[in-house]
Image (cartoon, rainbow, N blue to C red):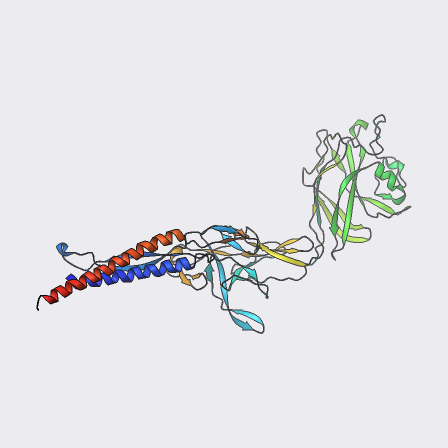
Amino acid sequence: MGIYGALSTAVTGLRAQSHALENISGNIANSQTTGYKRIETSFVDLIPDAPLKGQVPGAVLAQSRGTNNLQGDIQTSGTETFIALNSSGFFVVEPKVGQSDGNAVFAGSNFYTRRGDFEIDKDGMLVNGAGFYLKGLPIDPATGNVSGSVPEVLKLTNSYLAAKQTQVINYQANLPQLPKTAAYDSTVDNSEIMKAGDFAGGTTGSALAVIQGGDKELFEKNSIYGGAITVYAANGAPANVQMRWAKVDNSASGGADTWHLYYNSNSTATGTQPAWTRVPEEYTFDSQGSMDPPVAQATISNLTVNGVNVGNITIRHNTNGMKQFADVNGTASVTTLNQNGYGAGEFQSVAISDTGRVVATYSNGERIDMAQVVTAQFNGVNSLKRHDGGVFTATTESGEPIMDLTGSGILGGALEASNTDISDEFTKLIITQQAYSAGTRIVSTADEMMQEALNMVR
């Protein structure tokens, strides 16, 4: 080969360094592109066939190498629909290919990206800065579980959230062994006990099912406050349920520590009108302060408060939710009090949580999971094919996507920056420049040697 071989090899070197320069240029240009993955240059030597004693280094070939497995810096963002991935996965997205009757049309193919700057468009879909739409799975509002297994473009609705009727009140508390009611007198035995015979319609030893309006003050004087909670009817009408506890027997009198729970069914009741209604359960406690027998839950049939009919309600205490321990204040200490209903609400905003759930917030304070973001993993992640807009498609070398429906690695309110390191790119730029310059010297030297060879025949 000789001089011609050297010249040819030098040209491949120039071509390879030019390819490296192109990659460096692209990396620097995209140093501020969200989710961008830089391209490295790999050099492969090409050795011509020759005897052992006649081998030469040969030419060079430049190849591109992806860095999809290298994560960029995670930066926080004030936009709640922006998301980043703290894992090796990709968001599943799809481009819009057109419009039909005012509706977006999609091709049905999956693309994969790390670019998570998603925002809601006019149609209620989440689209990133490159124009790709986020895909995921809908969530069944009744169960809160993911529905289906094939990712689809997510479309959110800003319609009103329908009211949900309260069905369960979770209630746990500690009742004082000695309730210090307004009627309690430390010098009078059993003054903390509410006696049915003192009330209209009651007799000694009876259990009062209701407290009449005329006895409201007497009842409140002989009972302690047990908390209050707002519940909702099927049409969203709110009802404020106020509760009071009355101790009706104790072990000092030869019986057992027994309590009755009442709720205020009519706050404006007068005369013989029912004002406080008893929950149909007896709460009896042993000497250790535990219920005996246990009352895991109580049921109020057709709960009605101040004319608002809520329906059947379960008061859930759980097995050990109610206790009777000594309390120096003599008051009930409520540890859990919540319910599962809500009134109708107007759509206000949407956010993506750290579990990949798309969560809508409504004016009634409710946060409802609407969809689950799906991510994809690849065994050969650096063998994905690149496309415009920071998206990739699967190849034979990358393998098929492995879908993750758990939202693992998703960070809400964050973005992944480009993994380009400017200082590193400048270092490679200097090396590339020097290598290219050295290659041109080889070409010049080969040209001079050829001129010398031609001059020998003159």
